[in-house]
Amino acid sequence: MLVRRKELDAKTLCPDPGAVYVYDARAGLLLVPDHTETWEWEEHAEGRFRWSTNNLGLLETQPTEREKHGLRILVTGDSHLMVTETEKSFPNAFESELRRAGYEGCEVLDSGVGYTGPRLYLRRIERFLELQPDVVIVSFFTGNDFWDDLLTDYDVLASPKPALDRGYARRLTDCQDHHAGALYQGLNQAHFFKHWPGTAELAYSLALASLDEIHALCRRQGMALFVVLLPTKIAVDVEDEPDVRAAALASLALSEEDAAVNVRLGERLARELAERGIPTLDPTAEMRADPRPFYWRRDHHLATSGHLFVAQAMLAAFEPELRKWKTKR
Image 1 (tube, rainbow, N blue to C red):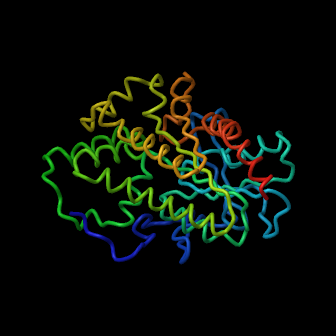
Image 2 (cartoon, helix red, strand yellow):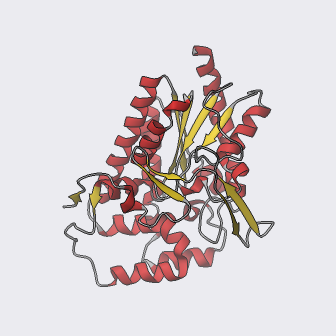
């Protein structure tokens, strides 16, 4: 039986914020405002990329005014919204796609913050309600957003452990040493669910409850809610470095069926969100069918090509809903 935490503490999720993150009493964890970093990145066409935050700590190249001058969309999610050039993150690429489609003056604000999951997405939306967004888009990463809420609500280290085999910790260390990107962006969650009985179902219920709370908040505030389900590199870039992919799975003794738990939970979530009337984009099948790699090999975050793919898929999936929503308004 897992032990519940007494309270949500962002310091548990990000114990050393460094220069990038800042603790916030309301949102839990935010990015430092007016901050710019250049990361050396061998896979990038220029060998590096720069990301920056604006006056409100949003991943934007320009300041955000309190007053809006057109359609305003707030996107929330985790580090997958961060690890690329700021102007090319899929929220900002979606803004460009919308403007080309005739939505002049629209804003799509990228409020992505690493180390966070659905419960903190809710709190971040509450934190930025003063910006009066018309639409909220939740970017839900199926590789770790299910167990993020589990770790937020429960203290795994203080909980009685199931009968773990002796290789459990060794496998994690080995995978971290050789395939850290795959571990942290999907396989750690799958490995945990395999060995801790019942946690996959518990994690799913907690994540869905957070999304239900976000949906209720949006209804109260008159905001539309859309959800994007981001898959893992392991799930879609199956033709990119297949030997490395196989080695990462083998290091954790995970079968394809074990690793696919993230996909199965994502498919289930898509169905339940649709039943609630929440427009949801799950691009897993389309990304898997496309031979181009969409994730960085270095750390398995969504790469620039993946951000553009997701932005264009969002336009196709959500623009008709945006038109209907504008008509109702």
